[in-house]
Amino acid sequence: MTVMPSFPQAREHSSLARAGAVLTIDLAAIAANWRALAARVGPSRCGAVVKADAYGLGAEHVAPVLAAAGCDTFFVAHLDEAIALRRVLPGPLRIAVLHGPLPGTEAEFLAHDILPVLNSPEQVAGFSRHAAVLGRRLRAIVQTDSGMSRFGLSRPELERLLAGDALQGLDLVLHMSHLACADEPGHGANAAQRQVFLDAVARLPGVPASLSASSGIFLGADFHFDLVRPGAALYGLAPQPGMANALRPVVRLEGRVLQLREVPSATAVGYGHTARTAGKARLATVGVGYADGFLRSLSNAGAAWRGGVRLPVIGRISMDSIVIDVSALPEGTLSPGDAVDLIGPEQDVDALARAAGTIGYEILTSLGARYLRRYVHH
Image (cartoon, helix red, strand yellow):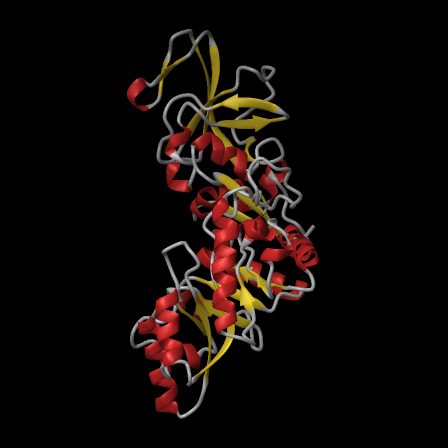
């Protein structure tokens, strides 16, 4: 496959020449991460969470690559996401909507061959009524709440449904729950939730079970059940903070230098004059800002990199630009149009997130629409 060039060759490609920043997404790394996770949990099956447009990286590009790697079960949050995904994922690949059906949307699930995750008695009742109208059993996923108090049937609600006939019209293909503290391996909630889920699994014998997403996979085989649902780990985020990340990096973000200047000591920089140079300095203005997902909390805290050299952000992040101190680079090595790494070999998504006081999930899903996106397979 032909890979588009990076900035040194930008003049040969008008789209690159115009771009203020380039986001490179390594589809081969995503596939490799899925295969590594699938091997880790075998013989349990491995699905993929591609909600929020595959965590901001483009579900229409990511999902077919995962399907080619062997994934057959995909999860999104909203029905519209699922309908869009079905256009690039033909049956019998399974697509499930984590939020379940809103009232009156049950027929659309069937029209597009989408599985609902039934989270409440109302959703169960609505889908069961639709099954009765059609006179046939309908496939669905049920979620029970094992201790997060967010989505899913409580134990009393499940017992009431089992005591009645609400589940009779449903063909349950999966029983799932979700861990609240999986990224903290020693947290007592993990074992407690697993036990609650085991009790619920016993009430639905014969239905395949799923408890773990990305971080839960690394809690061990006791948490794998029949299917795991990785999301962030597919995209290179560290599943367990503080532990070595064995997953391949997926994204690189390069911002272009728009202007260079030399300033004397004590020069104020940016909105609010929140920073002043400590001495004579060389500054570069880069065409990326908080409108592009380079979060404002990185003001006076974040950094770019060039040739292994850290270039600190100085002043506030603007909507469309940042200023970095490039004094550490030899003079003449940086020119307008050149690129600096905002996410790359020296600073991955998790490191940028730590500098911003957030998590890698927010960084990925905030990456803006103005970047030129390059999808590569290597």
